[in-house]
Image 1 (cartoon, rainbow, N blue to C red):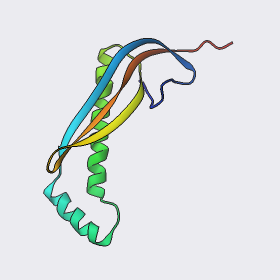
Image 2: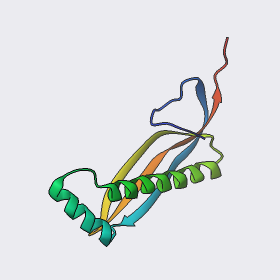
Image 3: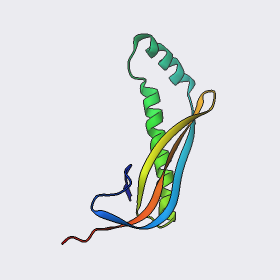
Image 4: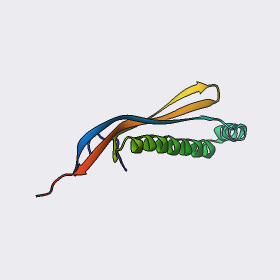
Length: 109
């Protein structure tokens, strides 16, 4: 499956529009990560526990979006975007969405 954040794919043409597809996940912070993050805030630097949490969240949201696109018969998702929002204190949603399409290679002369 081709995935891009642009409206088109170089070398391909869109032949069918399948519709909006989306995937999300809601994750809560872990008390151990919060303690480590609090200490890291004192000295500065990357909050690796949160980086890992967000990386896993993006992967899971993307997988869910692609699964939905596949169920619609798409072979590509264009104009992909990610967004986050707070759901409750200590929990956030990561949401991935895009447009499922069927593409085929452009004819070469």
